[in-house]
Length: 381
Ligand code: SF4
Ligand code: SF4
Image (cartoon, rainbow, N blue to C red; front, side, top):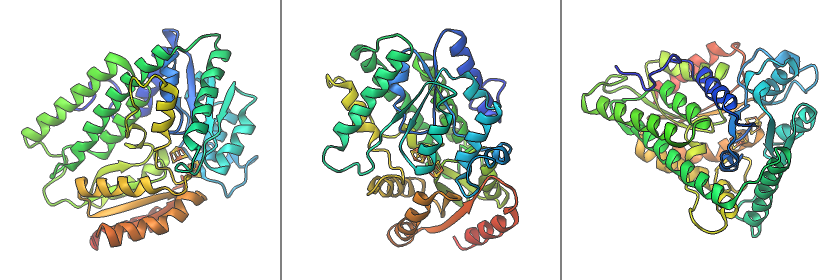
């Protein structure tokens, strides 16, 4: 079967992303590290920079982080922090500046501890997105980030450059959405490893090169569908993953689904489709407001109410037709953990689909227990 990417990085999406960032840096682009889907990358691209994702999913640096941070903190935060302390995150080492957002408490306080390492801007994110004034306030934060980049790198980011960047990002995001829509094919023509690789690639890819690559992927998937080249046999149980971002050591959960013979057909998280959904309005005359409006629609559990998450789940369940929704919650992520109460009831009662919540960290110690629970949930789906 033709792979989606014709390069040396098969099965190595993070190495591909690193190569993308390094190539752009060597060509003169400033690297702006980001920890969250709320980072408005249109502003970075408009400056001629390149965003690099800094969220880490490795268990290796956690012991180092726990020398400073509380043990009962989300592993994503501990891993990201530990990498910085050890100076072993290749992405962070490439960054010229970092942007953070006031999402969850652990992350926002962690930013205070890393500010000595790089120029850092923390965007104040309103967490009641439908309240009056929220969009206008968030626009101020987006403008603050733009000014921070202009000041840090002695440059100017024009409205015209922002408009162009919005157009390019919209084009790219629509193509990523089209690729994820192949998850609806039954039998499946795309694996979760490929969905994850596309989401990882698109974060640090931009312009005609990105468009050509994503269009090529769509052509490959179209050919697979037409030639009946399936990635799993007919009748395979289908799974949608929702919840916290996943990667690295926490991919253990997704691998266990593979081991049980089921197929993951959708990744509804920030390491999946979430950062590419929604459209930024073009040609409004106020690109910062257009960016602010679009980003405030991201349905993260740090928001209240987070009604958008349920709209997305409905749309994803209706199109992907999963037999089971796995809500993957990282340990000590209170927002996703509490929201799971409503998500479970919505998925079971309103969408009529089986549901399993999994709370885990980056260690391998719960593998046996996870395997049993996933197998039982699939059996009942
Ligand atoms: S889950 Fe929320 S806080 Fe985490 S990266 Fe996504 S949007 Fe940001
Ligand atoms: S997974 Fe939850 S606790 Fe961890 S960084 Fe993301 S929002 Fe914060």
